[in-house]
Image 1 (cartoon, rainbow, N blue to C red):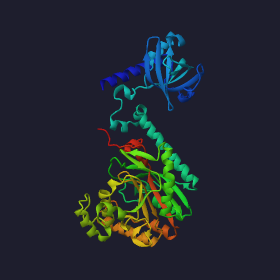
Image 2: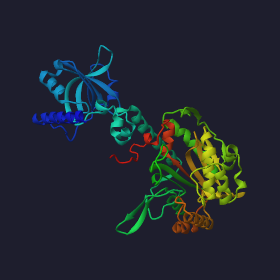
Image 3: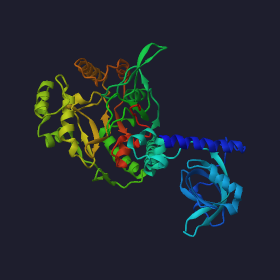
Image 4: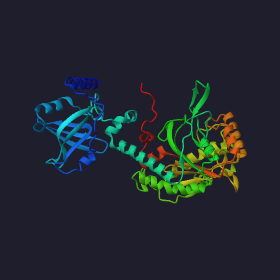
Amino acid sequence: MIEEIEEYQARLGRLNNLKANGIEAYPAKSEKGANLVDAKAMAVDTAVESSGRLVAIRDMGKLCFAQLKDASAKMQLAISEKEIGKEKYKFFVKNFDLGDFIWVSGNIFVTHAGETSILVKDYKILSKALLPLPEKFHGLTDIEQRYRRRYLDLLSNDQSMEIAKIRSNVVRELRNYFDSKGFYEVETPVLQTLYGGALAKPFKTHHNALDIPLYLRIAPELYLKRLIVGGFEKVYEIAKCFRNEGIDNNHNPEFTQIEFYWAYADYTMLMDMVEDYLPRLIKAAGKDLKLSIGGQEVDFTGPYPRITMRDLIKQYAKIDIEDYPDDESMYKKAIELKVNDIKPGTGRGKLIDEIYKVYARPYIVNPIFMIDHPVELSPLAKKRADDPRYVERFQLLCVGGNELCNAFSELNDPLDQEERFKEQTRLEAAGDDESMPYDEDFIEALKHGMPPTGGLGMGIDRLIKLLVDADNLKEVILFPTMRPEK
């Protein structure tokens, strides 16, 4: 800490030196000049101007080698007393620090070591850095500090910058794909009077002017389906969502997903679409369809197997969920199977899901579509016509059961939807704080008529985490939620 304070005071002194010499240390405007990646490709003796951050300085007396970095590359600078004069050379080595942004002009040359460099003929300060770069004191190897001070993490860890760029490329490809398929990108409320669209606990706030409680959305689903009622046939939203739940390697309270709704489609058509667009996203990330994730080779080449939830549980838990048709019998079996974190009154659907998570999920490696969930687990999905105990739903799973997509043939029967909302209300009264509230306005919208519709949600954070083989979701969220420092 003492060293950092001394360094800060020394840099303040050099800032004052700049001011004393009539130099503006933070000019309002400067031309960028050439990107360094382009400058490195220029021919010898080509005149060049460029700008960037100083990330290395090595003074050798009358010759100083420095390294300049911008968003495209790093490049060596040679600052010579012979080239720019004794006074200007001395001023540079005494007043410029690692982290400073500078502009330089000069000519391209190649050193004896074969490194393409800029022989500097002129320079000027663009922004004076008053605190040192991470390499100066920690190297920013502390994981928690990397997440808290992402700006320093991006500066010092090339991998972090690469992940951020991969994420941007994937989101761009998502938009390009859905735009090319005739979908309209829309925006729906983040602040909602009723949360819905998923089984999750919301964040609650209060609007002072209206004197009403409001909730941060847990999903955009019910609003997007209102748009289908209103006449749109293809809509999508890249949505920030919020769930007041735990934080771990796979969960952040604030996360990003894409949800889309497609009129006159069902869940089989959505599975076909996923098999079409997912390889494109993987390629946009610069990856092959065969990836190493968590030490296992995962092959994203389609088509993906389609296996019912019932059959997965049969295979791994060695039980048939149809032998336990009500809450009580399923609860007794879950206790017998040593499933934790359940309590009396837990609904049958949630119990089935917990059994799946304990017994089947850890063994999934290559992508599969888990299809046809029990109706109790899916209050917004359409029942199968041949067996109303199950719904037309799928989740795309891979590598330890990580869920990439969740999709339904959407329930458009308002009377059926009304009954399922009532069941959610019963679960809430029994103590389930992740149940879905009764949404009367949504029921009214459905009563005006919604065509057969397929809908899908895909977590962007989790997809990127898998593609870059990160251990923690925080690696792929630029500013993850963190406990405040003491």
